[in-house]
Image 1 (tube, rainbow, N blue to C red):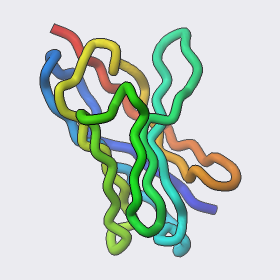
Image 2: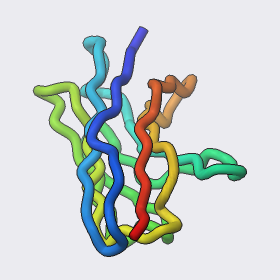
Image 3: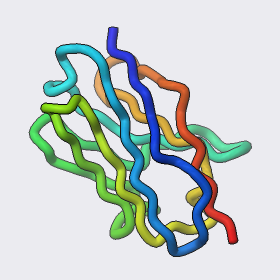
Amino acid sequence: QVQLVESGGGVVQPGGSLRLSCAASGSKFSIMPMGWYRQAPGKERELVAHITSGGNTWCADSAKGRFTISRDNAKNTVYLQMNSLKSEDTAVYYCSPTQGPRIWGQGIQVTVSS
């Protein structure tokens, strides 16, 4: 069973940057497509960015041009670089495989506020 631990969140001003990390346990990480999701208060959880095992990426329109997803299979880690942050990016961010059952960690709070 894969376990996921997110880190790197915090409070940042509009226009600022954060880099989220998701460390995964388990030997199958390198073949798993992974995604970053977020859930804002009162809203449903949504997929923000996705990366295949081969490194192909996709970003939601709301994140395109500002967020970059990447992975380091040697470190069993997936990253989300977030630039030009906006108040509407405030949410709890989660990583999970995007194929098969979703696996949720504890999530990490990102707050964008002046």
